[in-house]
Image (cartoon, rainbow, N blue to C red; front, top):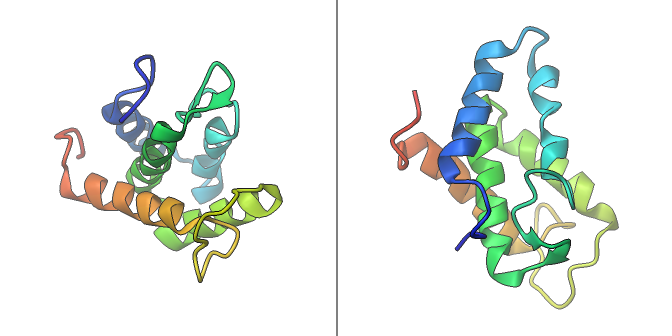
Length: 127
């Protein structure tokens, strides 16, 4: 489920592929796009009108994985970055991941799902 005004999954794949093709400074250039996913950022798919919309939490995590895999960011690097970013957040009563302890288990599973979907060419746009 995604917001009506949210981006199509193909958008995130295309952004990642464009970053991968345009990388001149290595992985750090590609990582520069990740702040677009921050809370309230232009690619924050879980907020509508500035408020968290719970049905979109999974989609928001999946598209992070779609982008990162398409951009060539290793899965463990993305999850470590996400874990660090989440260190100051409060998630309420949800199961936390046993490896990436600052992240809810569902977020980790959904970011990994995004990687799998991008690798499988599920959206028919991957190179």
